[in-house]
Image 1 (cartoon, one colour):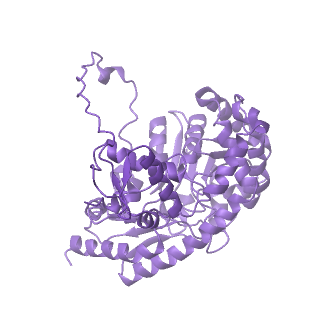
Image 2 (tube, one colour):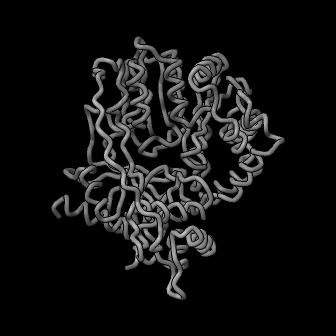
Image 3 (cartoon, rainbow, N blue to C red):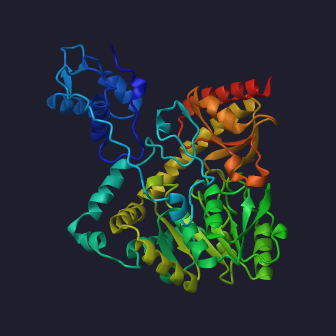
Length: 489
């Protein structure tokens, strides 16, 4: 009996070489009892093609497993699970412990129950993953990232790897952000005005903690990034929600008494709307009128493959009202967890002190590796490559969407990596997503982006960052078929 090739997939978050990952997949399958003794493995050619790796990588993994008696070879027939392979362990079920603590009373503040949706851990095993924000291993420059990591591990960089910066950051990474990344967004800043964070979400949390109290009011977009809403609700500040239209946040609808305005002007989350220049000026004017601060989340600006992006809102700021949030997690890989805050020195000073009291600083090795990858030009080359591939995928997806007469509710003017979609009235996107999973299709229901008292449950998001172009038409066709069934057509 042959083991199905569809049971093999590489975890995007896995560590180690591709050869080691393949060995681990097979060894774990045997130890877990999923692969039985005597079962035949896929040929090295088929498995290499399926995983998108070289054949020699699979062959070396098989050879190592053969040496360790996990596999056996039968002439020209191929590789099989060895009859003397390690047996799956038979653990006794541990006795359930009964806590004597009343956790309903002991827990002072709850953080569960947020609106952030859970994504399948095995999303890469699905044939049609229209999943947002995940890395495409076929595009990432593994070789040069590995070289940069090795360089960062060298003796020359020992202090950067091992030192306790306390509240400081890697100077090489800060210099690249100042001289390269921010200048591309029209922003000029000093080192004292930049702070490295563990991704954009950590930057938003730090900002909320520094700026907001239970007596202050924050304004967010509706719909908006669900994790931001959770962060602000946990801060217990007063929260108002401002509707967005085809140009993004509407400044004239921001209520009096607002202290902090959170916005995504370049690429509204999740509708992808881009705020035009005149409205940006109006937003700055409204913030001045309120004596409010604006927090600009400038995620995904690198994916501007259709047209050049507008300069960041902060580039128009002459009063220090805008705090800028950037991240490398979207353009490199989400597991990197590396972002940055840019703001006036008094704000950065407080955010730096808060970060130091919670986690000191992001790991020095990660900062230095990223600094090398960015400064040596690998990052720009990767962004250009991703832009070309994303444009091709976007064209294929838009054509397929139009052929099946699905409704696009929002699309990025400059690019991005997803479409904001609307299903017919009466079609619940969560129900649609659940049914599509049984057909190997993953989509992201949109209800979590809306406020709880005004949920619109027929919106969903389709991303093209993690699915090859050739699979998009069939995936969209399956979505269309399922929508028609739910709509009763």
